[in-house]
Image (cartoon, rainbow, N blue to C red):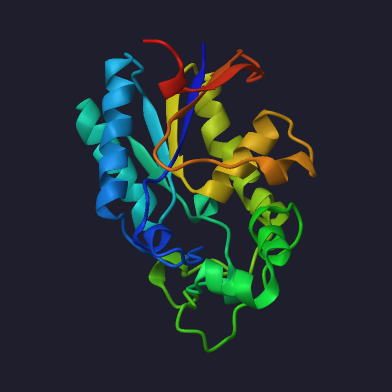
Length: 230
């Protein structure tokens, strides 16, 4: 049975500071590193082994994956990194404090930017200190100025279909270590979540989500590993 494990990276330093992060590259906080190790230990203790891994090109997701695999004694597993699994681009919100934005424009507007299907944040200014267009990771990529979840889905799903789905069809046990919104994109597709309902989907940091799939990759079961009895 193909098995897909989705894991949002552990708490990042900007999660801790309550800042919009997006494509800006920040590392895990101490708590985030502990969350990643706990996820790896849980996977190992539950006997859920892996064959192949995918992650973004952002440090917090890569570091999470490394810590998980270290706990599982599986650092040798093949890992593919791709920008298409990056967090959604938060545009002009990048680096800003979330509570300050709520105070400035209201909770409803901030919630729409964070969780709605097709409402993008304001675009990033060309002279922003958080512009990553010059980063060599994106040398052949048209870096967006901002992204809605709809925009994020448009780049995540082609990668899923081209790279992740074939591994699953081959019966491999796959782990994707990524971000809240790139994983929401995958969950929307896998669980057939409606455009309106997706607003309510929150994915916690460091908690493995297990999808048990049929040979046709239809979902047979979906659960948080920590919530299932050992």
